[in-house]
Length: 166
Length: 424
Image (tube, rainbow over all chains, first blue to last red; front, side):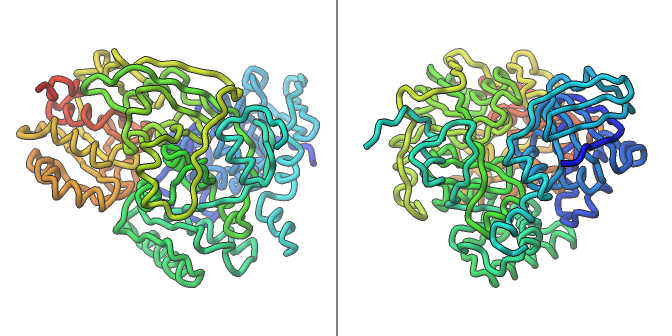
């Protein structure tokens, strides 16, 4: 698994899926189109300021609320390299993994990172480093099964492999 | 028979579905799915399914598709999506297809006998937990993972730990299942059950109708629950025995099963509860919130749009008028419920008060096309989410409450206690 490196964007606790991707755009099913509405209602500037390769750093329970996959899809297709949070809501967590969007559960991460800091994340080793401050910290890596799924690019490639289709 | 240690209901169902003697919380298993439900987002599932590259779904009889989120279609884009899916279900031989004239998916799964004790039911909607009211391991999943289910019939699941929730006491007048579950969420928090199963028992729960149990299982998702069981009993069996579409098994946790934690409540003195903006766990009693001016009141949805809800709202509203400054919207959870309410005279009572009747569907709850709010407006609603922007503007304010509280508030034009309208 490659080392992820990017600039941090800080989010609060309990960022829900209506905030990430408003319900009014749920009939959009083209993955490439979803980033146009990412965080539109509550963080309308995010899309013009953030860049592909950046990293989202959030508090607890990121992605709570609806099962809409577009919340994870929009983040992934915007090009966010990784979402690091104290904790994730269950369905968002599954959607991210199944779409191959790298995520890391790092309790207390916001105390170590400020907006704009350059950070690296090693998902397999459970190591995060803040290049701006020079400080590093460890976290518990996700189970092997889940890391493998993310590594394979998510559940579609994994299912194709399982069925002998590719 | 070998000696097995005591298991939770969750562990029992997932062990069976994974083809193992036993599984334990924390384990990741591949489980066989009994029922796979999607609504209009089946279109996203279909796209992922096509990317997997399988021609035919694994078992068309285990797939259920129900249109409810945007019915009738509010835009050309939705209309096109629905058209594609009508063609897809025909081509795939999916007979369990419910078009725009049936109801909200979670209600339809129960009414039509798909939700039943002991099965594994997955749905591409977070409130799929509703099926736990009948003892199903019912949980919400994403579209891509549903595509894998369509292709293989199986899904990876992490076996969750279980929170035991015991609710004692007798519900006072004007206090309902909605108030119980709001109290629970307010106590354990919006992530109090994240990635966990909840298991409800106690006299206040066993005394509830299936419709009220559905409120508990539906809203428990807002505490993060992966599944929210009401332990199956005679009420469950009486409901499912004649409508079950397939086999079921009345399972329960072993008496000394291991729980992550146990929470006990007594509802004998509970007052009506409200979830205040913008978090479902920001729960307060009516005495703290009464008097807040409102612009819209919504009675209905998969949480509280069943016959007993409409009946209770009508009891409060009968012979009265909705405050002229308030728009009251009524959304039955299904057309079957609508017809029952019609023949009982409930619909006439509600419309006579000045209510607007919305067709059965997700409607205003979703903020997609019906009953959206303007900036600065306040709504009290019997639905399940009060997130910022959920019902239209991000600058609107949502209070979640029981249908009776919503009805009383509609009369007064401000958040109001329903109990005074229910005397004698």
